[in-house]
Image 1: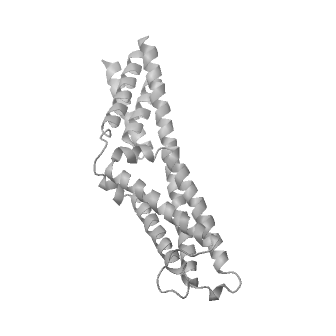
Image 2: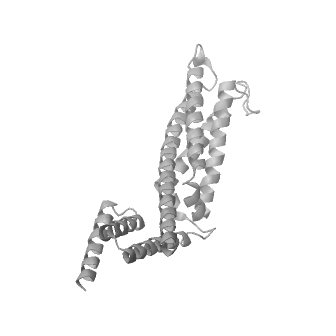
Length: 240
């Protein structure tokens, strides 16, 4: 009886410490750490099985709670990542419009199609592509929480945001130096193109933030998968 009381006491203490250590950002992971500390401290077979069962149960319940394919995920729009995606779409759209309105014959009052140099064309295509793909990702994250959780923890998102950051920055810098070359003040739509280049550099910073956050989410997902597989392997050994 004394042993059981001590077990319960240390269990509460370790669980509380794990919650404090985790900063209350992820209760399930903190609970896993607490259970690990518990069975390592007591080194008991029964307690080890109990800890493994409780950890796997929490992980399964967490997976089951997010298995609904379609569902309105309004929280994502209000989150930092959602606001960041909206800013990226808006800035990309503004850049596209600035280039579209100025890359035309100077004597024409209508657009008359896109008539720009190679530097302007590259910037236009990069901004338009980033705007379309970011809009598709944002829409899929809003209508499906599963897509939001799974996509943001994959290497695909890390690569996409990194490529957007790189190409957006390069095309913006190239466009900025191109319009500020010799006799560029007389260029038609000079101020619009400079503004587009500056907004493109700002947008590349937003893409960089998204890439870093996606990398961190991907790394946490890999660590969690390793923990889950290790626990399943230990549980299989115990029942063997």
